[in-house]
Each structure stands twice: as C-alpha cells, then as structure tokens.
Image (cartoon, rainbow, N blue to C red; front, side, top):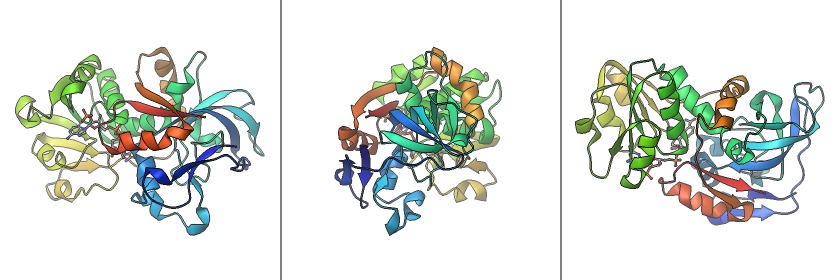
Length: 312
Ligand SMILES: NC(=O)c1ccc[n+]([C@@H]2O[C@H](COP(=O)([O-])OP(=O)(O)OC[C@H]3O[C@@H](n4cnc5c(N)ncnc54)[C@H](OP(=O)(O)O)[C@@H]3O)[C@@H](O)[C@H]2O)c1
C-alpha cells in the first residue's frame, strides 16, 4: 500500500510516499480500515520534527513511522474477537498517540475502542478531520473547562481546527463566547457565534470582560495575560502539550492541558450533528498524500484555518 512515512526526524521534506509499505495486520480488538481521508494536525509535524513528547518515545526500530492520528475509512477486515463492527461500515476516530499504525496510509489497523460509526450521509472528508480535534474540544471545553450555561468564555486560536469546535461546544451549552484570531478570520469567528477579537489590532484584555473560562490554543504570548483576565475562581485550559502551567498553579488558578483516552461513544454522540452540519468542521484544503509536505508547511505557520485533509 501507499503510506506517508518518515525514516528520520526532520523538516517536511523527510516525508515520502512509500508505495511498498506493508498493509498492517489487524490484531485482536482491531479492525483494518481502508482510509478515505486522514486529518492533519499540528501534532503530526511535532512528531515529524521530533519535538513532541510522543516522538521522544519512538525507538530506532519503530522507523519508518507512518504519520497521522485521525481518519475516516471503511472497515475491510476484522481482527480476532471483534464483534463491534462489520465489514463495509464507515468509521472515524483517533488512535492513541502511541498506536503503531498511522493514518496517512491507504490502510490502517485501528483498535475498535477508538472508532465510532459515521452516520448515513456523513461526508468522509469531514469525518477524516474530526476524531482528534473533537476529542480535544470535548476534553478542553466540557471535561476540564466544565463550561456552564451563562458563563463567559474566551478562545485564543478560535479559527484553528480545535478552536472552531471549542467555540461551537461552548455555544451549545449556552455560554457567551469571545474568540481571538487575525483580521482575515474575523468573519468566521462571527459566523461561529463568537464575539470576534482581532489580535493584530486589538488587545483582548481591553475589548472583552473578565472570563469564567479561557481556552488558549496559542499559549505563547497569550497565557500570562489570560491569567489576569479571569474572574476570581476562573479556569484556564491550554492546548499545547508542552505548556508550563506553573504561573497559574502558583496563583491558585485551576489550569489544565488536555490529555485524554480515546472516547468513541462520545464521538458517536456528536456525529449526527457533525453529519448534518449543526456542528461545523471547516475543511480548508484536501490534498493527495504526495502533498503532505505542503500540508505540514501550512500547519507550521500557526495560521492554518479549519482542517487540511489528506486523501490517498
Ligand atoms: N493537548 C492536546 O491534546 C492537543 C490536541 C490538539 C491540539 N493541540 C495543540 O493545540 C494547538 C492548536 O491546535 P489546532 O489544531 O487548533 O491548530 P491550528 O489549526 O494550527 O490553529 C491555530 C490557530 O491559532 C490562531 N492564532 C495564531 N496566532 C494567534 C494568536 N497570537 N492569538 C490568537 N490566535 C492565534 C490562528 O489564526 P490566524 O490564522 O487568524 O492567526 C489559527 O487559526 C496546537 O499547538 C496543537 O498542537 C493540543
């Protein structure tokens, strides 16, 4: 099969399409899926360049590594003992970060406990880019952020893959949301139902009230001013995994970084709303595997909008 792999850490150019990659064997509790669409995420380039915590766990014998931590595909074969899915069903999800089988590939062997069904009529391209960002948004907004109706919430990075979902989840529970992005993305923030803030021309601390909850998808330059922009008892959730929460903890401010197990039943709960478009997963670009390096270059700017999807 064809798979986008790295044989060492490095820049986007270390990714190559291996046309002779082995089709993975589904082990007990896994299914083999034929990948229809694989989502790209900042995590992928942080694994590719060796900077993420997950990359540091990779051993020389793990290479070549197939990248990709979320996908949508059709079940092609069942591993031993699998009764949860049938061949031919369309599924989506996010394998654990250390799972051996990557999603930038024509086939992936994924554990059933990371997969949910795509509802009838759901767009595989959209669902290919949903597993990781929706799991993150649920964890950040609902589980760690504990967002409540009537609360004031601020989202830094509101037009990113995760940020757009965070805004929508917070609006659905009845919170009032302010969201920050650059000038060109102000209309999108408003479409999602947030009060838009332009970090290029405005200071969020001056143009919005103090918040009950801040979800910070940016961290660099936004985290410390955000701590001063919380009401007493306010909470902050910071998305980048390597963020240092010490300044919050020292001040007694509840602060989290999302860490979560696969959550297929909760993905399934939101899937009808994703399929109908009630919850939007914005697709910015759909690129073939051969252009994975272009997807990473855009992600690495820190200014990609919505999701970039790779297709076989
Ligand atoms: N802990 C976890 O489990 C977890 C899971 C998923 C993601 N993450 C991390 O969370 C971060 C966001 O992920 P993502 O997929 O949403 O990223 P993304 O799609 O690359 O989005 C980044 C967004 O940030 C905005 N932005 C850039 N500079 C900003 C600033 N100074 N103030 C406010 N917004 C700014 C950009 O908007 P403009 O283009 O308008 O600047 C862009 O829309 C990444 O670091 C990712 O690695 C962590």
